[in-house]
Image (tube, rainbow, N blue to C red; front, top):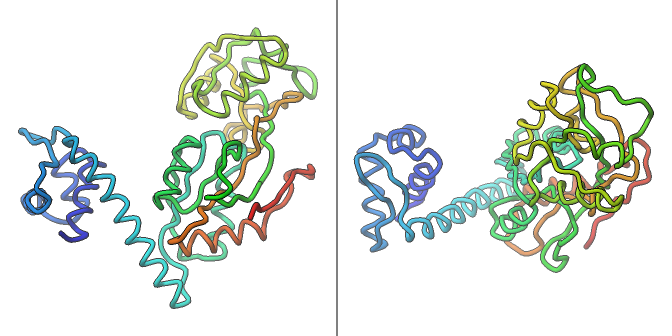
Length: 306
């Protein structure tokens, strides 16, 4: 077994196509197929369901695939650690971000890139639970997530800010007077919201319930771009974080603050405590600590939990 075989396996999972996986790995399709069969022979289990085309992975293949991803992540961490020992900070920082985090992740990436110009970045939109799971398995370097259920024994966190909410609407279709809106004023609007299992949506539901309201959303989706499309076409309004930058994407979009509206838990940058811990994670976490500032002059709590 060698690391290339594991790359072939992961590429096949990501492309779901033998030819595209071979192209991504810069080998011929027969070479990729032969190396995967060699891997199956060595492990003594069938990994890939084959027909005239790729049909998926076997149950054993799914389990082996998870290990392959962990080993590839460990290899990437090893190479980054070796570079750090040589005084270089290179490689790819893997950052997991909850949808509608209320903190623009590009602010973090810009500061990391300014300090270490050779860094590359991978962003993954994940739930809070998925971020913690992948951090624990070293499949992410850092996570931008809510701190409500954080296990402080296994993770350290830098609290960035509370996430305040506003109503996103297209001013060509909806017009709201006043500096701030109330939950009551939103109850009768056609609303497009994230799916109910997401933390940000749960905070929205809590806000309505606290005012004795239970509106039914006109649209529910787990994709932020679909919310923006619906709002841009005047089909609905949406409730989004005030400081995410989404309202700046279109001159016709307006994000109006909602009074007494914030998420149930603060947002933070999270890093695993235990070794092996990526040198990239430690370096970038330190930059975030040094650069942490209150947003818009508000007195947000910014603290590292060690």
